[in-house]
Amino acid sequence: MTVHDAWEHVPSMPITTSTRRATNDEIAREMDRRGEVIERLEARIEALEAEVERLRTLLRSAVSSADRNCPCHEETPNPCPKCGASVENLEACRAGELTLPVGVYYEIRVALEASHADR
Image (tube, rainbow, N blue to C red; front, side, top):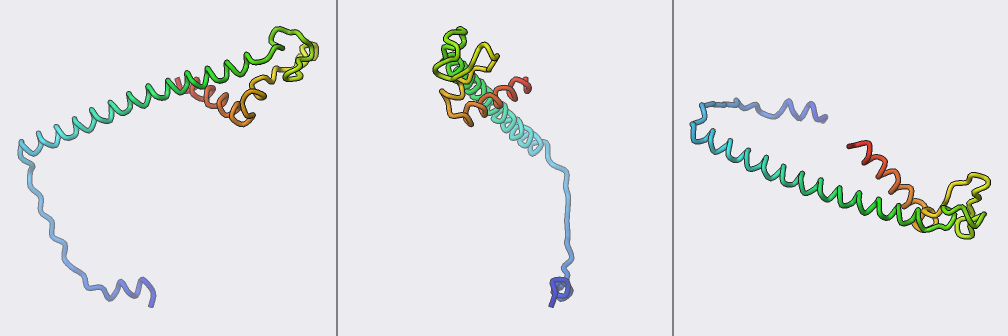
């Protein structure tokens, strides 16, 4: 027996609906309830936006600290003993990669660039 066959054996039932106009008190209570929900959602959004900004600040600080952690920014010594970048060959500093795990460093960079684009 298929599902379709099984449904053919289910007795049908009439569905009865009724409607009535809401009273003014019911409408007022529903409006108050919705207003409270909106206020809670707005407060939650504000708290989350503040948390996102704190996280952005933390990420910027971590990347900035990692980027400053290498002497090759001063162009001496050449090549840098820490990251191996050669100023003469115009190689980019790899201090951030060496300070933070590479995947974490790049994920932070991507997150900061995406958050900058969202503004």
